[in-house]
Length: 325
Ligand SMILES: [Zn+2]
Image 1 (tube, protein in one colour):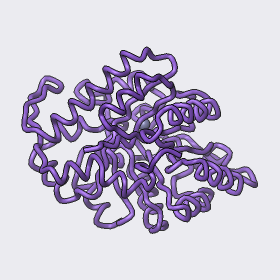
Image 2: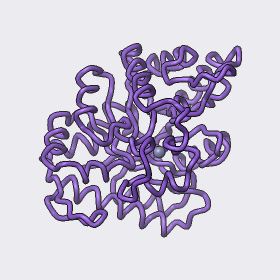
Image 3: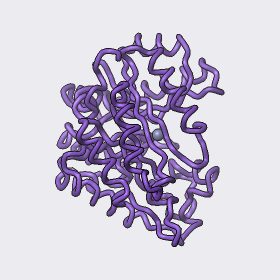
Image 4: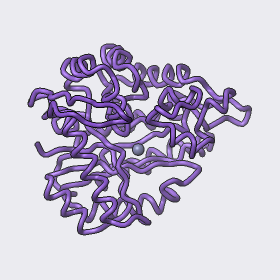
């Protein structure tokens, strides 16, 4: 299958990890995130660690860089960012990430929230498209972010631990619909830009919403990162039919992490368990236990599995499967 995981955050290098990837014939896209909170550390240090991971995993890992959006009002923001990205692409980066802080946190001095289709970012999107690279867009959040706490939600713990991102507590912030509408305009305005919507494009509760976007925007795909549970909890036949009908538009991704302060055996176990669980769900009709429920695997046809696990990643993220650079 030569699987590709298009959404990981790996910032530690360890030969045991290179072994895992070699054994599974696995390729990953290692994604940097530019945020104020520094979840993965300051951007420069993070980028250096990601590059070390990619360098230690020849042929198995490619880099997805990012840029600091908080300087978007500086006079030379776009010019500077484009120059930087151009250099990263020459050094082997294959994609660029934008994060949820665009749409949910970033503001103009007069208090307006800056959306992903803001003209400040237009030259950056043009550069990514011109270089035949991919925009990985984590835009908005799961719907549960705007809803009252529900212990049954897959994201319950995240919002409990990260109240600053829990929009139910911040009704003055933009609604989800407003942010996704801006994402849709970005897709319409940049038809030559390949966009992979991270986390099922934040349309995790209803595959019909994803299908609508696929029909409207041929330049749009989604990854499954950290949202596989939503697919597992949704009606089986509906999800199965969706994945078969749009088999060229969904790329496999996990959101797995390998962080500097983590012990390697724990991370290795987490990665292997996640891959085994997802494979069981997508490729077999065996039963999984999830949140007190029994879930039957989708047993997708083999050609569909090949697309989701490999072919789509190669198409949507050009260069992901190229030899080491
Ligand atoms: Zn992620």
